[in-house]
Structures are given as C-alpha cells and as structure tokens.
Amino acid sequence: MRILVLGGTAWLGGEVAAQAVAAGHRVTALARGRAGEVPAGVSLVRADRSTPGAYDALGGADWDAVVDVARQPSHVRGALAALADRARSWVFVSSASVYASHDDPGADESAPLLDPSPEDDEGWETYGARKVACEQAVLGAIPDRALVARAGLVAGPGDHTDRTGYWPLRFAHPATADGAVLVPDSPIDTQVIDVRDLAAWLLRCAEVAAVGVANAAGSVVPLPDHLRTARQVTGHDGELVRVSQDWLAEHEVAPWSGERSLPLWLPLPEYAGMMSRSTAAAESLGLRARPLAQTLEDTLAWELAQGPGRPRRAGLAPADEVALVDLARAVG
Image (tube, rainbow, N blue to C red; front, side, top):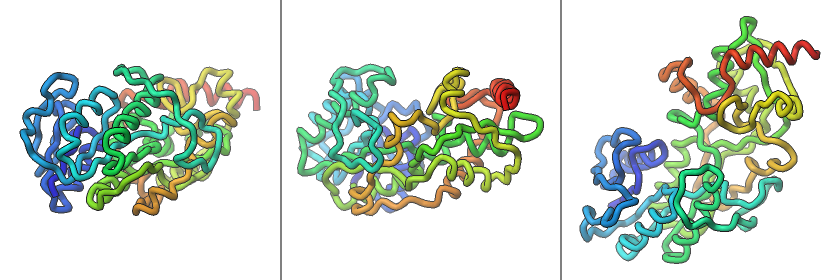
C-alpha cells in the first residue's frame, strides 16, 4: 500500500510510519521534520501545513490511506481539500478530550461532544474543541471513507508528556531517603494505551479501510492497581504515603499533568469516566492492548535512558515531594 502520514516524525506519527514500513508498505511522511527523526525507510516531504501550497510537493499521487494526527482545524481542512479525492481511506486521530463531560464510566462514542472551535491556537484549554472541529471536517467531507479514532491517554516509551513514565520512575528512584512515595488515595480508573498498540491498530484500520468513530484506549485499571503494577515492575517496597484529593488540593498539587502535579490522578466525581470509556467499537476493529506491566517496564527503560534528573512536564519535583511527605506524616 501507499500510505501518507501527515506528521510522521513525532511520537505517535513516527510509530505509525515505522510500523507501516516494517509491514512492507511504501510510506511517505509530510512534516516540517522538527519533532523527531524520520523513521528508516520513510520518504520525508518537508512542508509546513500552515502555509499555502503545503501539499504541492506531493504532486498528483494517489494514496491507499492517509493517516492524520493534526490538532489544528485549518491543517485538517487543508489536507482534505488537497488530498481527499486521491485517498482510498482516511484515518484521523482525535482524542477523548472531545467529550463534553467525563463523569460517566463506560460511556461510548454517542456521548455528547464539546462545541467545536474552528480556529487554530496552541492553548490546551481549546484542545478538545479544536479536535471536535477537526472531526467534523473529516466526517463532513468523506464520511464513507474515514475512521475517527478518539485516543485515550497514550503511554509507553517516548512519552514526552511525562505522565505515564512518572510513577515507574518515581518508584525506581524515590525522592525520600527512606523510599516513601506520595500517592493519591483515590479509586479513580486509569486507561492508558501503549503507543505501539495504538499505532498497530491505526495501521490495521488503514489497511482494511475501516470506517466510523471509535474510542481507542487500553484496559480499565483502577489507580491503586496501576500503582501496584508500577511498584512490582520496579521492585519498590517503600512506604506509600496516601493522601486524599482534598489534601492534595489544599496543598496545591495539581491533577493529571503540569508543574507540581500527580499524573493519572483526577478529581472525583467529575472525572469518574475520563479513563473508563467503552472501547467495544475499537476492539471490534482489532484493537488489542498489551499488559500494563510491559508498557510500564519499557517506559521505565526509556525514562532511565533519558536521565531521571531531567526537567519534567508532569509530576512532583523531588524537593517538593519530600516536603509534602513530611507534611502528610506530621498530621498522621
């Protein structure tokens, strides 16, 4: 097959492109080429999708499949205008962030969406609404040839968001002298999808020209079990200093990601369904998730190769954690 990956040098796009080459396909990536190295065997066409004529260098080629991971509505509209008539199938990678609420465990693809935001910007607060606009553009242009994959939290080696690598790294290298680790005392579910499994499924959907909308996420694992698995992977046997979500809020520890945060934790009840969505549609199209332990083990190996002391986009700095553990212990 002739496959075009719009992106193809960053994390997920690069994994899709690499797996497509390994499967014997002829793969072209259209990208600026700044987000990462071009996978071996992939032909790179350098282009900035925000500029006029971004797709001219592709010529008049036809494609068996186009895979797009864009988050800017104008990029999606431009790609469709230039390429839709020359693509047998189209896979657009959206996000579970498109949903209007996240409090309903087990919700499927029929759940209400955010109002679309058709204008480009880089703000995280509009990310979900921009993805809605992207979805609408794809499904409005080629509903009979498109798959929209609403990806959950992507995990695995290469996770530069630092969310899924935080816990195995922290258990492998505790901040405290006695090995204690601060953890949320919360039963909230987690639902991560290994980047390699997601890429394999997206490629499969491209190969069979799958159509529809599907939540693409991993198995639902309560946070305590997720943390237990991370401890088993690392051999951690130190104390878990458990604190409530009210305590975390009182001490200005953010949920999910960002500076001074605890990844994977989200407040209840408003986020009870954020990471427990139905994946039946994706599973019917062949989505399979590897064991969480394998994902965490491989992510830890990647984290250690990057250097455990590097600046992070999510989690607690060691000094912060030590101070918070002391505070939590002081009140029993």
